[in-house]
Length: 343
Image (cartoon, rainbow, N blue to C red):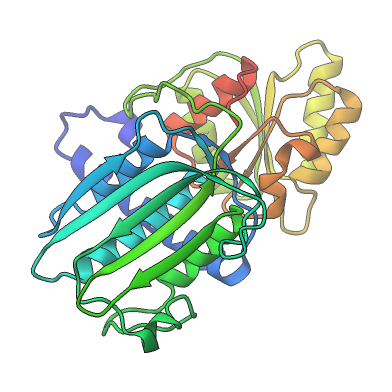
C-alpha cells in the first residue's frame, strides 16, 4: 500500500506505523527462536561504531537517562549478525536505563583489544576483539543475584520475563565472543561484551531509507504461500523486474529449464527455503546448478537456520529474510546481479 500512495497522503503515516509494528513482531519472534532453538548468526562485516550510535539513540529515546559515548577512533569492523547484536546492545541499554528510574548516566565505551593465547578467564580464541562496556549508576546487583544473572527466567523485575540476558549470552556465545558482568551494591553495574574483529571491511555507504535500487532483469520467484508470491511479485514488478512465480521447487525447475533452453533465461531466482509437502529451495537449487552452473540464486526464509548462515555452501549467492522489505529486496537483487560481495 505504501508503494501506491504519495508520502504526503494522510494514510501514509498510519501505514508506516503498521510497518514498524510488523517489524517489531518479527524481531520478537526471532528473539524467541534464538532462545528456543539457537541457530548460527547470519553475519557480515559491520561498522560497530555506527551500530552502537544508532542503537543507543533509538533504545534510549525519551529516557530520563543520559548516555555518553566513548568510542575509540577508527574501530575496525566486526563480523556479526546485525539484528542479533542490535538486540544485545538494546537489551543491555534498557536494563541500564531501568536500573535508574529517576534517570542517571549511562557510559557506553568501545575499544580495540588484543586477546593473547591462554586467556583462562575469557576463554576466547587469540586475536583482536572489540570490547563494548555499558555501565550504569544504578543500585547494583547483589552477589546472590549476580551468579544467576544469565539464567533463563531469572528476573528481579515485576514485569520481566527473565529471557533478555539469557538471549544476550546465547547470541554472544554463537558469535565466538564473551559477555560478563561486574557489579557492586550501591556502585552500579557494568556489562562487558567481546566481539571478534572482522577480516573484511564494512560497507562504507549506507543507502538512505527512501532510496530504491531498480532493475529490469528477469526474476523467478518460488514460494508455497500464494499471498507471499502475490505480494513479492508486486514488489519486484514495482522495482522494474520481469517476474514469473512458482509454488514449489519442482515447478520452479521446470520453468527455469524451459526458459534456459529457449534462450530467454532468468537472470536470478529467489527460492523459499522450506515448502510444506514439496521441494524446497535447498534441493531445487542443486538441480538448477546441473542445468546452469552459473545460476544466480537467492535463498529466502522467515526463520533462522544453520543453512541460511552457510548459504554459499549450498549454491546460493545471497539471502533475504521475510517479511520482505522493498528497499532490502532491491539492494540484494542489485548486489547479486552485479556480483557485489558484501557478505
